[in-house]
Image (cartoon, rainbow, N blue to C red; front, side):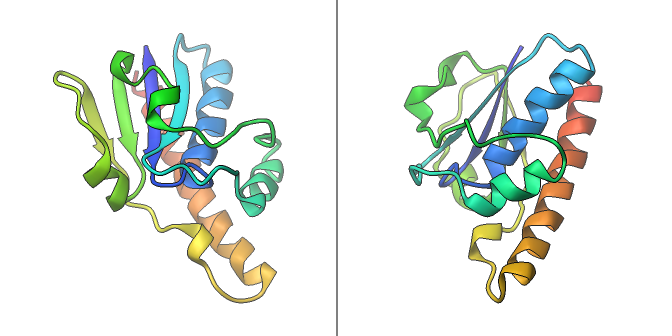
Length: 138
């Protein structure tokens, strides 16, 4: 099975989902390949996404922002969009199940670094919960 996590920039939400997806795939011994991409890739991974994932013991610093063309998009069995923009811009594949998780973009958080980290942690925790539940349901 191949799962793709899609958002607009592929710099935070979908990167965290990819990190959790790979972690829980190994932990739960699931035969699933995990991918992430953006409808308009930012070209980088947000440093605060890397930081909050490291707090969970997951290193996403080696991942990179990718376009839909850089993953086996037409071979995906399941697509999860993580924001409204990606759901609108993400092409559909007939017969492929699609979930939409409308999560706020933590990269748009304002304030001090600690206030931004709080938003990143909240989004990270929601992503972890949903990814774990998704993989448990397979």
